Image (cartoon, rainbow over all chains, first blue to last red; front, side, top):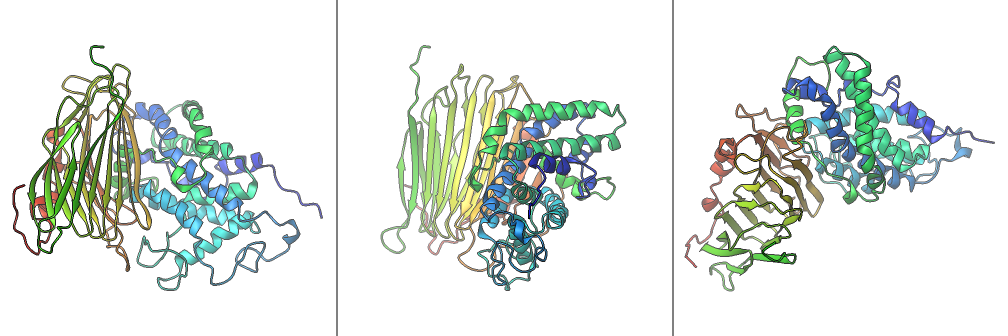
Length: 280
Length: 270
């Protein structure tokens, strides 16, 4: 049987499209926290460039490394199209019940977490990761890469003491391992499933972050809706000089660690407010 | 240029080891270079050591390396005798690399003084720490963009702290006084931080970090609770002397001199 797969570019378009119900609409890519924290709206264009060349690259590098790792999990198996969806019997990956958290995935999550010092931003990213995992397991149920994550996620949610993985860090009292997967790692699995080139993974991540902020800005500050579209392009253009470097990331240690201290502080304050439009 | 460029690595070393016989003071091994090491006090498990600049640092082309090693179960308190100024390097970058290795149960308290990045300076300042099981690192780092009246040069602040289980904190902050970036430091000239990290114990869960979100203090300092335990407390502002971290409870609760539980607390001057 000939199996038709969408072109990786089409998948990138789908993932970047706000109409995809992945949960991104509840997020402002740190913009609401920034404006509530006192950043003048006039600074938004420069702030977007700043994100595209700092924290977005941490996310992008995480996705690239996750995609490289999970591409090794094995290919999509066309002959397996009619097999039960992820969580069922093996579709190219060993889904033995005792195999829990994947140490490779754990290492990527740890690298990301060590580069994301703000708990508010880690929480927001994990919330998005949950929505993305739903997208991934529904649209790519038989991808080996996605299956590794689904299994890892299930293992990470098991009560402490029941997981057999090589984990020891905890985020809450009820999970073991590295907890709910952050968005960037799930994005990496989807990109692996789709066969997306690493440079496109970076561009997609940067674009999505910038467009999320631009879209949120229209709800927070009245302005010409085309103005932030210009800023999205400017932010992506500023990131372009970093794209190849980030696309070359191969190990968790390679992931950029470029931080934004003010953004982190604003995120913490915002997480404690009750009057807000966006989750983060 | 009147002075020849300095490009070699200038290594300063502090090593703290157990005494050779039980109850003897710890041994402190040092190597001086652009920084001189002065032992202030030694006890059975604790040493206090001061770092003193021996000349003008940092100039363009300088590469200062500081290696700090504390053996299992020992504690070291490091103090800076003066702050550091990175001068206009006239296009030549300079580096300040700190390498910390803490053994099992070891401890380092280092209340660093401000690191000032003059206009024209291009500095990379890195801290690379490896924590043994149950080790603790308490580090104050203050970077200031510009001397009085200056916007300040360019600085890359890089921190990598890990233990046997993997990374605890990996961060790079890039700032340039003439090109402030909103969301990074904005127009703030001072980034003041206290890093308080623990190496995971050999077994058992890591120390609990308390509530996940600590409210920002009224003084503007923010405490970030890291994923694997430990905290990064940070204040961004306009002038180092205004920083609330001078009064941080981290130092107040654990005044460096009183920190190590010494079985035999007799201190002697070296």
